[in-house]
Amino acid sequence: MSSTGRDLREPCEGEPIAIFGPNGSGKTALLRQLASRRALLVPENPDDFFVRFTVADEVAYMLEEEGVAPQEIRDRVFDALRTVGLSDRAWDPVHSLSGGQKRRLALAVALAAGTPRVLLDMPYMDLDPEIRGQLRTILSAMIESCRTVVYTTPKRRYAANNAVTLGSPQDHVELPEPRTVEGEVRARGLALAYGDRNVLSGVDLEVGSGEVVCVVGPNGSGKTTLGKALAGLVKPRRGTVVSRGPRAYVPQTPDLAFIGTTIREEAKALGVPRLAQAFEKHADTPIYALNRGLRRLAAVTAIMASGLGVVVLDEPTNDLDDRYTSLMASLIREAAGRGTAIVVVTHDPDLAAEACSRFTRVDGGALAEVNAGDAMRYLSQ
Image (tube, rainbow, N blue to C red):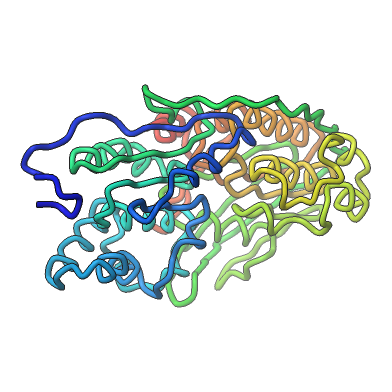
């Protein structure tokens, strides 16, 4: 018998239920209303969910709380980690994982747990194409073990057939034209590390004025570390980065990019009044009261409109709906057209198709140019 009281020799049928809708439509609020003591709620930000130091201990935590036998705990922990591709990181600190790997870890916790209901807020966010392609299989396996699975998504391509669709008034955002600027960045022989772990070695990359270079590759391959090095935030162990024009990096978590408490304050601090005009409806709302997608769009817009020479965007459309994704692509193209050199770290095939002029792939510690067709096939898995 399973912990849900159902015989797992007779698999259940059905599909995961998707809560689909645009940014700000109330998807997360609805998911939280479904939470109870018998439901596992995995939030949008995995860091808000984790309680243990190492990867394996995190997966084991709920099982220990349920009083599962030690050998069964071990079996379930490593089965789950193998499924999400983290078995080789079992004894690493949770904080050493990349954003996508943390999302994988949250999935492993959900797989191993015995709760009858699993509620996943934005599970497709941060995942590389390989594990994203496996996610439907993972969710179906939970269903077959007689568990109810509900998840949220703002993107139509990830909504299940039986999706609950939410709607809301579309926020009108008239993105400002970026300032005209000339920028470029060149990296030669970069060797990059995270702590004591070597991440990349011998990396060469040149991004010229007006280019949009997308960096793709598996979770944990070093894409974010490379982006930070290009923006001057991480010192390489070896090699050089030379740039022309001021540089900026917009992180995966958009909240870290703000200076002011409102968009109007942000616009004043950056000297970009057009930012407040673009988000006029929300200009005086506390930034942290805005939905996450709107915060991300505002954070990137603020940087792009500031007239910087080099901009690195780390997963800029992670939690954006289809409309905001198109707006983001337009903003990137506008800035590139005025001379900004732009590097985009992304797993999003829609953004890549609309915005990127070149592609590079990080894998196995190396960086290589890839043609657009191969890059799009990889991203669309």
